Image (cartoon, rainbow, N blue to C red; front, top):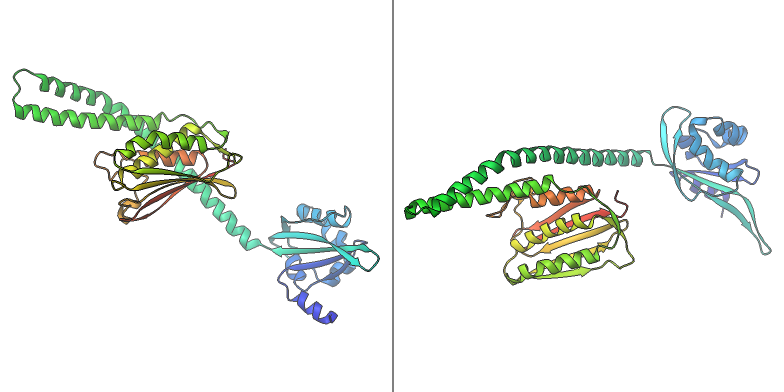
Length: 363
């Protein structure tokens, strides 16, 4: 191919391409080298790599890519480095180096290196912003949990004793020998309300007293089988069948707290059963992503309305007649303790899928 055509192709690249010969001299640099590194081919050729780059200590990681190629004769598959541009400002570069070889019928010999530097400053900035947003989200979530814990402790402390007294007096009234039917009915309603408040206090207390996370490394399969087996009798009473789809091999390991995962899965299954139609199905999934374990609970019941979805993880919010609204809040807390995330998709009248993603390196 005509060398001029090759030169035009290389100059049309958006990346910086530099060819370094076996002696460490710059044999070629395309036009975009000036934009990305701040030096033209002629400047690099005449001044040399050492005097151009290595004298600037602030570009240590970038310089190391050059040193590894020219002096250590090693290639760099891929790395991201900061580069302080001679005209001011800092760029984030993706750096790759590879051997430049010449082959003939008798042998293949090393004649230098090709170095490619891609300007990924915008992508890196967006990644950093996304990371900051995720960190802020996690911080806000932790602050929310701490605030809720303080609220929950106050609620549990202030309500428990009065509720016990109300329930006790209502029971005495009901057992009185000369109590008419209407009064006994009123007392029965009071006692029912007191028992409901007691249940709420117990739910709040369970959230406050949740144990600290204790991670192990292992497979979640046995935990899932155990919970599904425990939940099957209650589901069967409604004619609901739970099907466990285990797509995780025994060799695949996750970092998780078995006791907390049991609580989270139990809460999701309870919801799925409660909101399913009699005689329907609940699917439970367990499988591996690229770097995470994914848990799923899918029902085919009444679904979640758009109006309710915004408040789903809020405490004391429940669409169940006798619900306390603490189950999903506790589940969300457990997921965050694992460094994971919980999401849901729902279509009213067709069911809901809850999906939990837990990183395999959770700490």
